[in-house]
Amino acid sequence: MRQNWWKFLGIAILIYSVVVGMSTPLKPGVLRMDPLSIGQNGNDSLRILHGETHKFRIKGYNTNFVDNDNKAWLKLDSIGSVKARKVNIVNDTEIDLTFDIPKHFPQRDTFESLTLVLYNIEDGPAILPDAVFVRSDLSPLSDNSEWEVNPIADLTDKAGMQFPYRSVLHETIRNTFFHIPLWFSMFIMLIVSLVYSVKYLRSGNLKYDIYASSLVNVAVLFGILGIITGSLWAKYTWGTFWTTDVKLNMSTVAMLIYVASLILRSSINDIDRRAKLSASYNIFAFAALIPLVFIIPRMTDSLHPGNGGNPALGGEDMENTLRMVFYPAIIGFTLLGLWMSSVLIRYEVLKDRWMSRG
Amino acid sequence: MNLSHVLAIIKKDIDIELRQKYAIGGTFLFAITSAYIIYKSFGELKPMEWNILVWIIVLYAGLNAIVKTFIQEKKETYLYYYTLFGPLEVIVAKLIYNYLFTLFLSFTVIGVFTVLLGNPIKDVSLFMKALLLGALGISSVFTFVSSVSGSSSSSSTMMSILSLPLVLPSVLIMERTTAVAMRLINDSEIYEDLVILGGIDLLLIGMIILIFPGLWKE
Image (cartoon, rainbow over all chains, first blue to last red; front, side, top):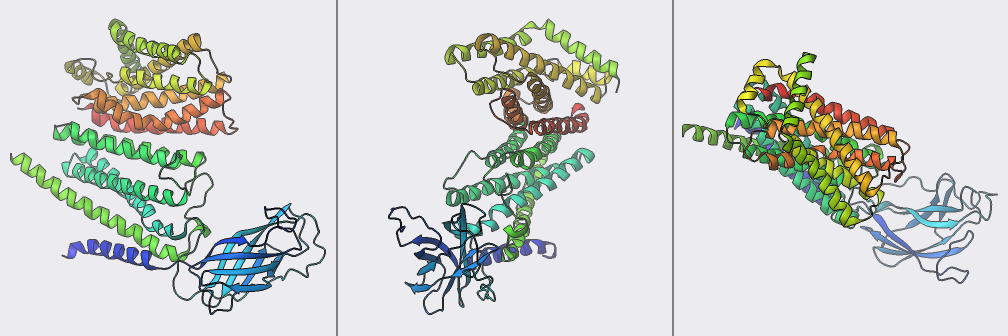
């Protein structure tokens, strides 16, 4: 029992990441902001000009507008904000806001995008970037009086732990705890298997060959699960299960390389030859994997986070609440994978002993 | 490693190849027939299709030719070589021989395509650089895989499933680079691609030289 502590640890960590990862609510967010008034120049299409008054219908997510003192601002980066003139609560997730768009804008661009900030004491702040675009090049910023410089201070966050609300991602942000840790643990297992392949070639001990091949087996399983979770994620964020994205195709090719290594193993009957060839191929496959997964996707445009200039795990792209579940999930999946391969190793060793007895 | 041994093995391979005319003739006939089928069925090719089809034919003809690197002679003959040469000399010779073969094959295919379908290459020097580096990657992967799959029962099937995913990075980057050489896409940083292509080649050849001595004993 004592040498099995890491298996229990792995399962405990996995249960923690699944329970916390699935039950923690998202922060309140703004789904959409629709104008209710038509453009004052009579067009159907709404054109928002400086100095006009507009009414908007806000659709919130996880919000509690009723029974709270709601405040709302439209914020222009590095200039200031305007507060909503009128706030009408429709229900818990819908609210009507009336804004006086300021007359004066800095002459930075033809259009300025304003960020919507909603606040009440229960929900904390909810933000919608690029909520409104205003034609802004017609009147220069002569006086700042319309813009409050820093009204959005002292906003307290909602109590308790929440995951960040991101447009497009919404609830699928929880897939961070499955898709990415599966790939991470696959890589860890492939590296361990590479080490055992080298060990086998140096020592000729058949035990190491069984270790390496069992690890590759489980790593391939994890890789396939990683592709499936990624594909589901793509369905809800990109709108399709599969695209011709480099990262996706290169990962599939990487999987093909390793599946081929399993087929190579099964095609040879002589144990020593099989061990030697599959160990050699395993080392070679890992060398080919590095350009496939780490170099080529970074060279070309890709939708996938971490490639083609898209954000991924670094810096502000990941929040600490996510990290609290994400890192344990990596450890949990890795321990689970190692456990699975240790079961496979025991089976293979027993099979070998049985075969050699004859 | 003895350079004269390496040259001796290469010379021997060329001699055998020229003596067994059916093998080399078959490979080139395969390439030319494929090119002719493409010519008759497409009639006229867009440059991008020209580019892709050339590499696919080179890939498959090369695959068929290089698969026999380690099985074309009798087992006893290899045992004899084993006593004569070190593993490093053998693999370097085979790599060089297969590289030359792949280059020769590529030039043949490109020549046939040029005669039948015209030649859309605009930047010849860039195309040649991509070809030299890409062919090195392709031939070294094929050489390695043929040494792995050489004596297993169904070696040509094994060869294709083992090697095609492995050559994919080289082939994709080479296709991209040659497409730039045909002015189909613009990329001012295409020399970075060439460096990566060379890097992949070095990585693959390094791995082969590390691994092969263990395999050669078999």
